[in-house]
Amino acid sequence: MKKFIIIIFVTLLSFTNGMAEDVLFEAKAPKQVISGRPFQLAYTVNAKGRNFEAPQFVDFEHMAGPYTSSSSSTTFVNGKRTSSFQMTYTFTLKADKEGTFTIGPATIVVSGQEYVSNGVRITVLPPDQEESTSIQHNQQVPSQQSRQQNKHSQNTAEQDIFIRTIVSKTRVHEQEALLLTYRLYFHNVDVAQFTNNTKLPDFTGFLKQDIEQQEIQSELEHYNGRNYQTANLYTTLLYPQHAGDIQIAPATFEAVLRVATREPIRSIFDGFFDTYQNVVKEIKSPGVTIHVESLPANKPTSYSGGVGQFNLSSNISTQKLNVNEAVTLHLDIKGNGNMKLLKAPSINWPDGFEAYDPKITNQYKPTSSGVIGTKSIEYLAIPRASGTYTIPPIKFAYFDINENTYKVLTTPEYTLQVNKSAQDVDSDPTIVSNYTAIAKEEIKQLGNDIRYIYTNDLEHANGKTKAKEHTWISYGSTIFWLCYLLPLFIAIVLFIIFHKQIKENADISRVRYKHANKVAQKRLKKAKELMNANNPNAFYEEIERAAWSYLSDRLTIPTADLTKDNIADILNQKNVPQPLITRVRNLLSEAEFARYTPAAIQHTMKDLYQETTELINELENQKL
View (cartoon, helix red, strand yellow):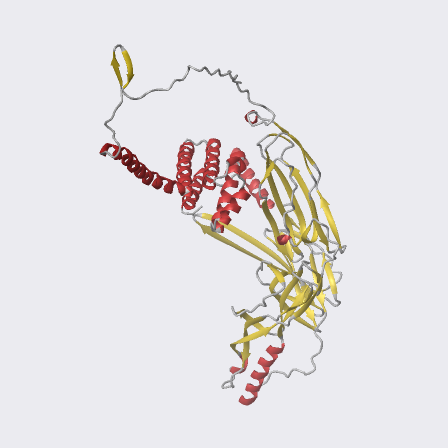
């Protein structure tokens, strides 16, 4: 029995501790209130507590409270029981002076532990100014007067709702961000919804970057002597693209208003109930003019259009590597400005390095204060010869809008030590292959080494041999003419045959095409075998060789003289479609990139194999 009681006590204690860890105690109040009007401040806690202590209301008049209320609920979902509890302490306060004030936190004790709520910050707005015309008290009126009151209600709605075009600044520099907001103002008007018939201006002369719109929430704002409920309908960042005065045209929104109407009184109950009708109202915001100043003329050579505030950092993957190994230089541009328009700074790679197009990753987002984030740039290059090389500092220039001047950021200088690899020994130009010298023997010509050879028949007489004279080939005989005509006929036949072959061989594109296709198909077959054997290194090497050797044969350029640039130029001269040229360049880059950094390639072996096969098939149909 004693053991059972201990188990129950430990269970209850752990349950109590678990509840104490999940206690939430917070204060809620309006962000804006009107001077002289009461409002409510509520403290809620999701557990049973005691010893609640409210803060001192120094800048507010304590009119009533705290009123205590509690609620609890229990739900069962899929056999699981869930319970919730909430206790609320409500105060009624009033502010008598304008300004922004803070109400301190309250305290409460739950399960023996004291909890502190958050404080609240409240802005007190001045009351509305007196209207020039007094509002008549509600009373029963004839039917004609009811119609006039209905018309007056609608006219009042038209006067009490409008949209402002709010810009953060009206005078900016080129490429300097400005925030534009279309804000709705309404007073004593019930806005049911907005339709889709919104007409925004074209923002000609600006680069526009919209800010993601959260759920529209209204708040109070004192404007022109009245307190309005306001809501931001559309917010965007604008970057002016040229100097001068740029006009932003008006925007048009369409809202559905819920307007109260009074029907003619037919019974004693009609005076207590209003009827409503929906009125579609078109609301137009005013236009605005932005004065754009041109940037100063003394632009640094490394300036590429950046305006804002930025900082620059860099790092390199290694400073010691072998020939044909890849090196990566990483660059981060962080800050606030026209991040979308920033161009990747150029790098002056040393001679002997083959550089690839930089990989750019954008991690920024538009906010009300501008586009904030990071533009990451990754440069990859491969040294083709050994030695000690220096990568000069990278310069990034931008226009600082706060200091109104150009600034140049610089990265450190990097020194690379490139060593020879075992595979590069054969390609070293300083190594001379050993050839066997063949000595030339002197040739001695003897007078009796070569004698005239007699080809006619010989006859023997008296033990002596002498040439036999034939008289059967006589001039003008049939055999005589056949000896002339037969070789001529054979020559004509051979001429026709060889002429046909020469004509076929004259089509160099077709001959080279056959050779290129044959070699490419052979290498692709081997690449497929390597892919099936899951040998990525050998696969990427074979794919690269297949692509380069195919293009070398088709374009009749030695492989050693081939580059991606001259391949693109030649294909362009031969009227190859530009998308196909771009795919060829991308394939060569991806194949070589995958060969040296297989872990970083985004394509699978199957995708690269299929892309290579398709490109070769498409190039076969081109007249190169």
